[in-house]
Amino acid sequence: MIENNELAAELAAADEERLTALSSRGLFKRAVKDVEDMTGDYVISGNSALVKMGSEKCIIKAPLESSSCTCPSRTVCRHLIGAVLLLKRELPPDAGAAVPEKEETPEPEPAKPEPCVPEEERPVMLSPARVRAVRECAGQVLKMLGGLLARGLIRADASAADELELAAVSAHAAGMAEAERLIRNLSKRLNDCTERRASFDAAAFTRLLYGCTEAVRSLDREEIAEAELGSFRAEYEPCRGTLTLLPLGIRDVRGGAYVGSTYYFLNMDEGAEERFLWYSDLRPTFYGFSPSAVPRTAVWGLGNPLRSMMKSRMTLSGARLCGSRLSGSNSTAVISAGRANHDCPQLRRMIIYDYRELAQRLRDAEEQPFLIRIEELAGYGFNKYTQHFGMTVRDAGGRSVGISIRYLAETKQFIEDVEKVCRRMKNERGVWTALVIGRMYEGRVVLEPVEFYSYIDAADMHRFTPERDTDEEEAVYARRLLRHLAELEEGLVRTVRSGLSTVQEDNGRLTEVLKGTGMTSLAGLAKEYFAAAGAYRHDIAAGGQEALLRLAALLRYIYAAKSRLGMISAIYEMEQSADADGE
Image 1 (tube, rainbow, N blue to C red):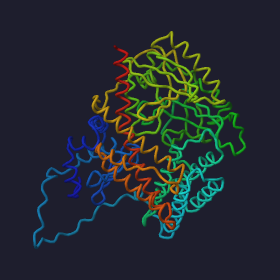
Image 2: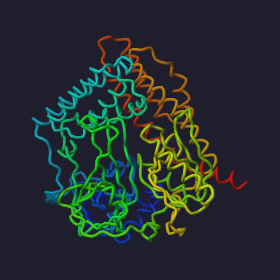
Image 3: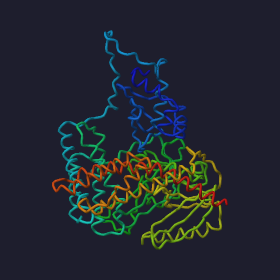
Image 4: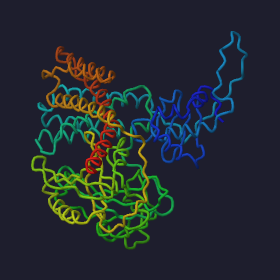
């Protein structure tokens, strides 16, 4: 029973209308379904509650907008809505009644001891000495990143990447595992820039700079929990019982900083939270691996490389998982193997027949694997300007989506194999299924192929209902906002390239346009950033750190807005393609 009056009143006021306003109607319905057969597993501490939702943990606070979840979602997720629904079942009958005003001479009551959070749930806080070390390191890193922004990529040389590597060493010494990983990744991308590699992408570098800044900035405070520093090694949790895997395909990585393969599997346990599992043997090329060689990985006690077992259904004992990633631990063993049958109910129930679901599921994720049904191949070919091989495929409703492969010397053979599939697909309508990696880009769903199957029967066993309807007016408005966001983001990327010391563009017009579209908060963040950038140019003693923090706040808004608006735009574009095809 929830006895804290403030939390109880907040939960009592959280009716369907309010929870729908916090998220969406579709998300609310999904959360209701999730908790139908669940019992509340929670701990109350003061005016907050720690609720377990499967593998995720939610902290529900008053007001509800300040609640948080351990899942990757940047917005109110189904776990938070489900946690609130579970807690509402624990409310006393008179919850939500108006709290009487304090009397002038209140009757003293004996203080009730609040329930203690179990030891295993209580966060381990850093000692004052470690907090000082972390904050000192965080301050040094932010100063270094501010200096990088001030100089710009055009003035960066090899020593800049080396400085970041030294910063990563300092982060390691301070125990900042997640910050170290991000700083090292930033250093590698900066090295690509200074060596003028064609693979360098300034927009991707800017996103990584933002992520690194946010991670380090979040540690510059007086109280820090041990868990917030991250782990130097992936923490794998043992699976209960056995784990049966159906191999789906392999994605090879050649050239660049890494070489190896990612192996994709379907978890045959339909009650599992993670259905798509993967194992990766990627290795940095600087360890001595040839950029063109493929590591021959043997794991799980197999006498043969894993690649040779990708046509066999395998049952593992002692399997360990970190999210959807499989461990190659020696404690895991293959206890049985047999012929893989992809034309099975477990796989058919995972196939997406309505491409709108791709946009909806990619709203809060950077990328995900999917199985999609291809009703028709609308076209394919090679774009010599972008150096990409592309396919346009349609679902049964006529909605289209693009599949793309970047041309490299290492992907030439794969592209040739996909071209052969395309020639067959033109004459074989409605029989193909594909394993793809999906992501959202500029308001469109973009897919990268991993494997194609022509022998899986057409049986729409996968049910999908859109969270919300998208009308033309809303979609046009979303696209308009996306164009403004893209223009603003491109300007910020140009600043990262040229540096703060270079005379910047006049962004007053864009700021006013953002105000005119109703995005006043974004316009305010943009104005603050431009002011900080201008202050650096007019004060030689000013560092770039203030502008860096303003840049991170602005990019946080842009990325979140693009994620939400991108889904609306992508779904509408698919529906328009279906309407055009029908005409």
